[in-house]
Image (cartoon, rainbow, N blue to C red; front, side, top):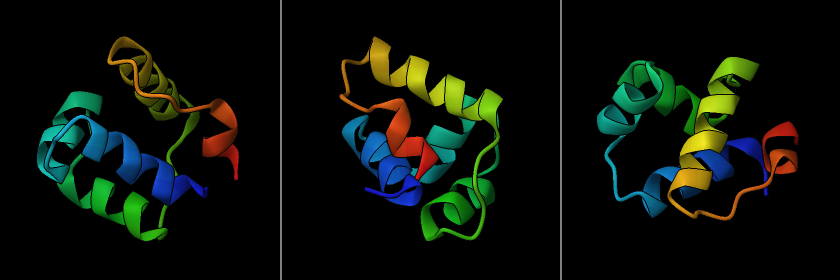
Length: 68
């Protein structure tokens, strides 16, 4: 699974719209859209936030999923 699929998988597992997920990790809806479309990659602090949210909500995502 590549990074954009991982981000979408996490967002969908949380049943959130792009804007809601963006608020959760302190980025805009447009940024989430760009992540999911593969036009941008998140920086490490954002990846850490996503990993914390996944862990807190028991969504199985590995760090390796964000590296590819």
